[in-house]
Amino acid sequence: MKKIFKGVTTLAFVLSAFNASASDAVLNIYNWAEYMPADVIQAFEKEYNVTVNYSTFENNEAMYSRLKLLKNKGYDVVFASTYFIEKMAREGMLAKIDKTKMHHLKDIYPGLLDQKFDPKNDYSLPYVWGVTGISYNANNIKSNQITSWNDLWNGKFQNQVMLLDDVRDVFGMALKTQGHSINTTNEAEIKQAYEKLRDLQPNVVVYNSDAPDVPYVTGEAMLGMQWNGSAYEARKEMPELKFVYPKEGSILWMDNFVVPEGSKNKELAYQFIDFFMRPENQARVIEEYGFPVPNKKAKSFLPKALQNDPMIFPIDEEVNKGEFTNDVGSAVNIYEKYWQLLKS
Image 1 (cartoon, rainbow, N blue to C red):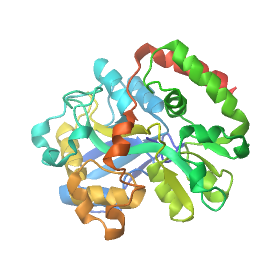
Image 2: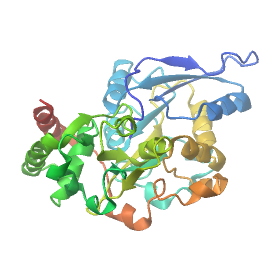
Image 3: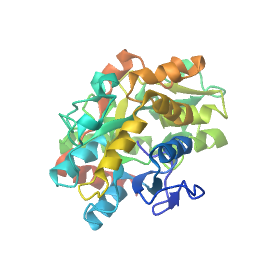
Image 4: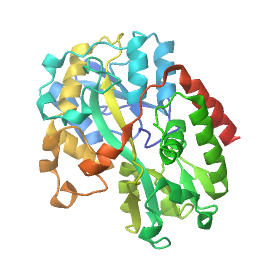
């Protein structure tokens, strides 16, 4: 995902700055901003008597470039989306995770493991996952008007649609409407998606991945693309915001723990990952951000109202219709070419 907040690329803060008993041990985390509950990080610091430095990036590309620049050193736990992990592992950027140090693997939903991007989960373990679907303001739009990605092209919605500022999500949506895989490497299909997206432009009011709940809350957008967790955040301020799993199938994504090959604190990194995979800590992630988590037992730690919230937890049928975003190799250049054309 992906990205709940964007634009702070070098911010670092020490969550235990006021903890005089902290040891000299330091764990360096590199993640999207506002993506981990601060109280859980503080609990880790207290339990293991360490200091956590939390630095942020704006997107996978920025994270990848910085790790390359630093020769995979300087960070101990990093977060990466599915389609970057295969590339990073292939380029020797990631250490193999010692799964004997992980005590909650048996509780992970099986469908989130052994994915194409990391078939044996040698280099990654899931942190959160989610769905890219459609949000709309029910005060202005009727539910029967929004069931499909194609509904965003309706001429009635001129200058009302928000798109995520994410090439793979946006092209994935268009590819889904045309019956193609969101991971196609066929330039003719990608070009066809571009041409359809070009037809959507009169309806588009904004591209936003910084804080994609905000255009709905402020009334700038009435409908459009949305991550389910961001819809959950927006709903806190506007109960009239609804979330739809499009009938063509949603775009699925997953953000993952990885350990850079150059980490000097691998054992501590494993402890951090294992700590965050505890069901009670995963439940805090759900409560804070509204994204589903991999540990099946986390639900039991949630308030009753959230345990079966369809905005957070899609039913199996919706998941089965969806498709995870995978690495497309050199075809990423084709996507970028048409993305730049679209945005220009």
